[in-house]
Length: 344
Ligand SMILES: Nc1ncnc2c1ncn2[C@@H]1O[C@H](COP(=O)(O)OP(=O)(O)OP(=O)(O)O)[C@@H](O)[C@H]1O
Ligand SMILES: [Mg+2]
Image 1 (tube, rainbow, N blue to C red):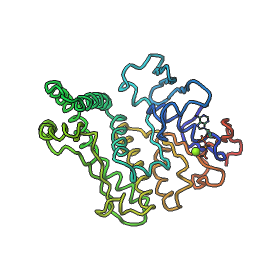
Image 2: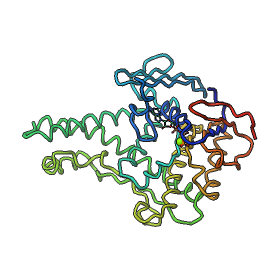
Image 3: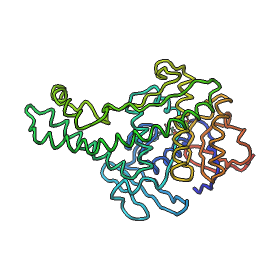
Image 4: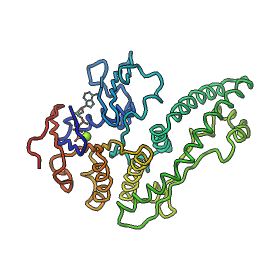
């Protein structure tokens, strides 16, 4: 399929394959599903693997090909195998809006960490490297702590490695949140009719010096046989008028907040990269009331003016007609996609 710049509306009844298309675009950008499923679940039932490929045309043109099966993984960028993921990330940038976003507010800290991590990986090539190295050494350190009598010299060298990568992650997150917070606050105000003040604060488990605090915590780590502080335990606190949104927010407020976070992500990427990311909007438009929908429209307008791309899934009944005539409509039916003749 060939998608021009602009708005693309993927129309169809339920279970026809609309989300599937968004998932494949997101997969090319992040190598993950946004539905929170593993790669194995993305393989068509009865098949051995999946393949997704695209030519991404922006200021330059890049070809991505990705094949995944239990036995073999093959990712190429312009025909060359990708050796380091940090060389790959940034080829295509996408932000997805979906019903699962609510978990950013309601869910475990892990989900908010992933939100920060994805944004940093999309903007700083080294971040992903540090993240992977940190995860690896954390795993080794925890395994060692589980031993009856861990070798303290080895533990010490793991700790030093952990601090090296961990501190870089903490620093990057600490710098990110104050930049993201005003964008999220603005987005929240745009969508919400009420005047709650959104506060977004990074909550690291390490207060000042990772090395020192890790040392201080050593006895506890050994007692619990696990590393208890570090960026793998961080959180992002989301407050509305000084109250934690997860505990005090209404359902509508939580939904608005989740949407605002994603809008902030898109605005932040646009600011850093200079052009908007591809926006993937799954079922969200139909769920929003008119007011919140109109809060989202400026973001879409800006994407449109910058010749960006927006993909939106809708059923025939709930597509946002206020977007007017500048839409390309595609009909999705039983896994087949067709350009919709009757452009309105
Ligand atoms: N691994 C898989 N193998 C085969 N079929 C699958 C697999 N995973 C999901 N499906 C099916 O693919 C179909 C299309 O799913 P998809 O989520 O893209 O639909 P949709 O058009 O977005 O529907 P809705 O409007 O309900 O969100 C569904 O029937 C779903 O059950
Ligand atoms: Mg769907």
